[in-house]
Image 1 (cartoon, rainbow, N blue to C red):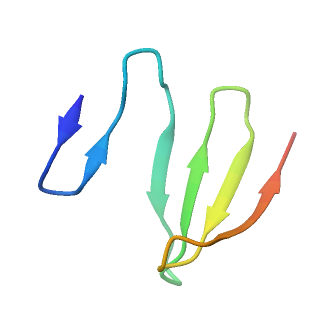
Image 2 (cartoon, rainbow, N blue to C red; image 1 turned 135 degrees about the vertical axis):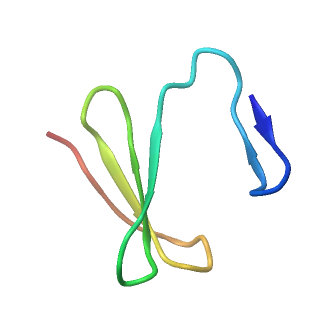
Length: 50
């Protein structure tokens, strides 16, 4: 899957959810429930493992 308009590219087999939060940060949620948080510049803020 490629979406050049948003700059998103995912290879087959990647099942992630990308969510833009109200404070301008982003959260990626993996299928196992692991969440990775990023700021608006793309720097990783932290990871939460269930």
